[in-house]
Amino acid sequence: MPNNRFAFFNGQIVPIEQAQVSVMTHGLNYGTGCFEGIRAYWSPDEEELFVFQLRAHYERLLRSCKVLFITLPYSVDELCDWTLELLRQEEFRSDVYIRPLAFKALEGIGVRLHELPDAFTIWALPFGKYIEQPSGLKVGTSSWRRVDDNAIPARLKATGAYVNSALAKSEAMLNGYDEAIVLTDDGHVSEGSAENIFLVRNGVLHTPGLTDNILEGITRTVIKELATQELGLQVVERSIDRTELYAADEIFFCGTGVEVAPVIEVDRRPVGDGAIGPIFKQIQSLYYAATHGADAKRRAWCTPVYARELAEA
Ligand code: PMP
Image (cartoon, rainbow, N blue to C red; front, side, top):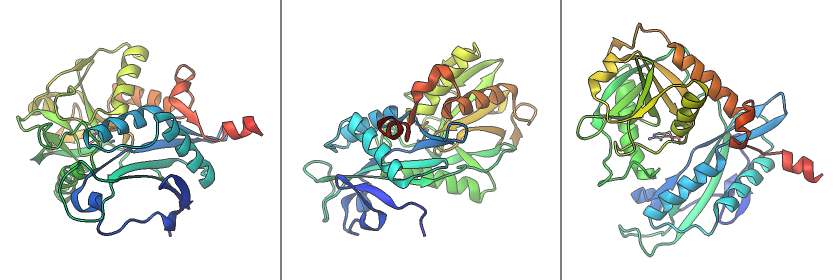
């Protein structure tokens, strides 16, 4: 039994059982869709559910849609409003993962993107940790390379591109690692299977640039701001060699699902001294505060789900 009851589907909120597609659906057969992963955090102190970076996710979704010739009949504001309405109807009082999904809805044969009907849905589930490994992750460099911008652009959160992520993730886990680090075709560090990556070297943060086939992560942007503005750290975006992973003092992943997660071992080599690093710990507590509405300067990053109802009552 799923512990969610509703979905936004075909322009309205319906019982989850009614949000169904045919086996003939284009997006299912060809991977012609794009999606978002958004988190909402329950604050017991405020008795409020806060959706983190809601607008930024829908702005990115519409950018993905544009490349795939998917036209949604909703503005960013409308998408945000439907999301909040769905969460209110679900009456969630826990941390939640929200999944907006746009896809080609033709039921039939034909590989293309143009002149096809589009569909859009949002569903949400109570959700805890994406990777449960508080003592730090042991990761392996994948033998799979990251999809290239001229093949399946990693900049888009395209459904079909996640075959690449899944290949890397399963290979890593079946080889005894917690997660994969995937390189670009020319051998530079790109990202994890579903998260961006930061290295710390001599007190400076380094992260692959936007042209290294990464998803333009929203958490990545958040971490850059917190690191520079709150910790006074320098953040350098540049191409990173594989062996810099072995030379790093600290490494961590970031993403909506994984939040921030420390990497303590790469390819059986300890990162730094093999313990969770001090810069990571500071970033983790800043990130936690920001996501839970406890960072006064960044309250605007958190959209309250129930407050509006109270205000209207
Ligand atoms: N890279 C990939 C491949 C991802 O799937 C994700 C998760 N959306 C990220 C990076 C992190 O992106 P964000 O911080 O926007 O969730």
